[in-house]
Length: 227
Image: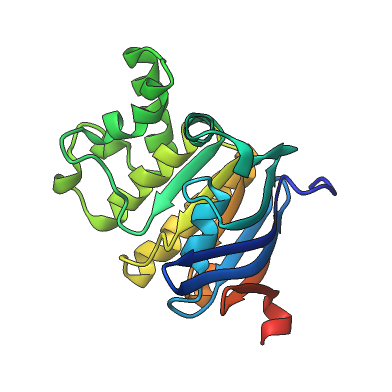
């Protein structure tokens, strides 16, 4: 890992109406690092992730990604960054039901202008790596939840992102499937050098990380300090 953070947030504030979600939150992530973001429900974990990923603009504070001020980018520039440098895994996969699993994984590549045949070949290769190439021609409604999350992980990794944002990626899975998804996600991220921001409330999931932080009352603390 390099000494300089790849992604660094300082003094983030974000409120929804009168309700503060973040209150002076700081965060840093180095290349190749897996950081677990923990905390009780409503503490601001997902808001922090959405701000770091450029999905939501903070009300105050700065976010630097690879030397660029993320908060100063236009909506189009942040959207482009999410298609190229960032990958996403959400609790319920959020796969497109009308597309096959291979087409779902290939979708980010297609949005970036890659030809269909090439994109789908890369997609199937990632499905094989995540041990679900047998569902490539099936649609999301025809597969299990555990298989669907592996497809979602393949979709997150197919563009070779530098940062993966995983928001409760095992929250809808049983413990066995959750463990397998986390094992495959962290193994693949370490092989590719991608950093991971992992939002979870489960200690067994956080155990896959290099470092744990806790969000409480909109602020970020090291897990050991917060304990």
